[in-house]
Amino acid sequence: MKYTKNQCKQMTKEQLIDELVKSGDIQEEFEKVLSRLDELSRKFDQVNSDLIITKKVNKYFEQKIKILEKDQLNASQYLCREMLELSPIPEDIPNDTLEASICLALSLTGEKIDPSDLLACHRMKKQDRAILKLKDRKKKHNILSNRDVLRDKGRELTELKLSNKLFVSESM
Image (cartoon, rainbow, N blue to C red; front, side, top):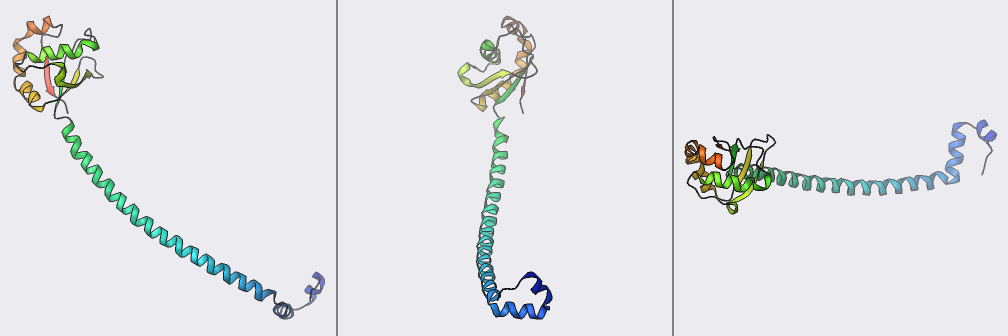
């Protein structure tokens, strides 16, 4: 039975509850709520299960990242093994002939160096310095072992339009 607002106001709480229970609406609503709770419970279980799986996958990838970072660090230690730094390099030497000039200067150490022996050669931010990467670590070692010879080769270095004192050092 349907009641108006005024009729409901005049009824006591107990009378209202009795009328609602008799009408059956509460039972239907309660079953709908229970059904919805069951559905939400299943979804929660599924989301929780997905979260557990995601955490495991995340942990796996974190471990992989740590391994890769360690490998990268180990590999980066070897990147500079073949690198040399030279200074001073006059700024009037054009960049397109820089490689050839450096090869000729390094050949004065007794180790024959030609452009094919270099992987890279360029000026550094400080323009009077150049950095180069050799293909062969043994050539780097031989150049460093014999770099003292360059002190006595001032005239030859000047002929190559380089400073009469060329310093060769390892680049880290």
